[in-house]
Image 1 (cartoon, rainbow, N blue to C red):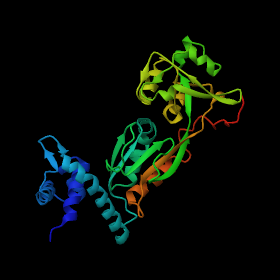
Image 2 (tube, rainbow, N blue to C red; image 1 turned 180 degrees about the vertical axis):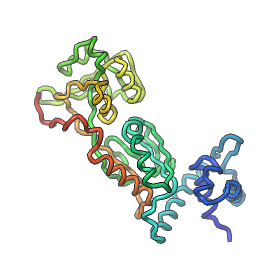
Image 3 (tube, rainbow, N blue to C red; image 1 turned 90 degrees about the vertical axis):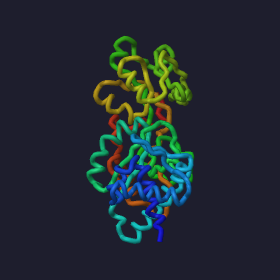
Image 4 (cartoon, one colour; image 1 turned 180 degrees about the horizontal axis):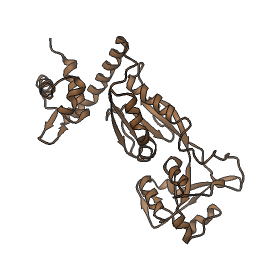
Amino acid sequence: MIDHASEMAAFVRVVDSKGFSAAAPSLGLTPSAVSKLVTRLETRLGVRLLQRTTRALSLTEEGEAFYATARRIVGEIETLENQISGQSGTPHGLLKVTTSLAFSTHQLAPVIAEFLERYPLLQLELMPTDRVVDMIEEGVDIAIRIGRLADTSFMARKIGEDVRLVCASPAYLATRRAPQRPEELIRHNCIVSRDRTYLNRWPFRIDGEVREIEVAGRVAVTEGEAQMRLALQGLGIVRLTRLTVATAIKNGELVSLLEEFRGEQPIPIHAVYPHRRHLAPKVTAFIDFIAEKFSPPPWEVLGSIPSKDAKP
């Protein structure tokens, strides 16, 4: 009897691991045995799923279509087997996580080693990006998303919240008087967003009401991490999430400005994952881990957020 499930699992693991040799240990097979399973699958389907070269593997058009569904099926099989076999307490396999560049760099990367040490049977693929990833299409297990959630078809667990801070380096403030009121920002060089121009309208609570100040500057940047690096060099005032700039402020590399005029609501941060009746142990383990590590959130080093009703 042909073992279709083994062929499909081998194909998915090869794609996830980016190679036959890398996939072999987690499948308990030799690289040649893994290759034979994938070849047998291609022969049975009558299409080529992978383009093989001496340096890399890539999915064909048919392979991309097959992988999207096959990974979901394999994940459901693993979940069912874990449930039935009683192994639900043993996280294992490949876990794919995506989040923003800032969250990955400043918050997630420092705790990954501890997570992998705690769960030695897990492999982790981290995908830092500021684009919104299609979790189903790209086979992602968990996305850590900052901001209001638009898609209600996924499960979500809140792991914290954040605010954006206006700040500048001591080097910049040595040459320019720090703004005392938000209106003074129009006379300053601000490091602005190139693509998301709505982020260049900074909200402040002024005289009891929230008003937006549209800022401008000599430098426009696509993503926040680069904005922070430029701010550290003294090129201007920047407004970024606290999780991005908290360490730099704590170390004296940046100075928080106009805190008493802060006018926005806190930004929620969620761990998002596809809806399943029985979550894979690896997903549950990761969500529980970050909930533990980020309670309270380590980026909240600057004290409590002023009430939105405060009237400077």
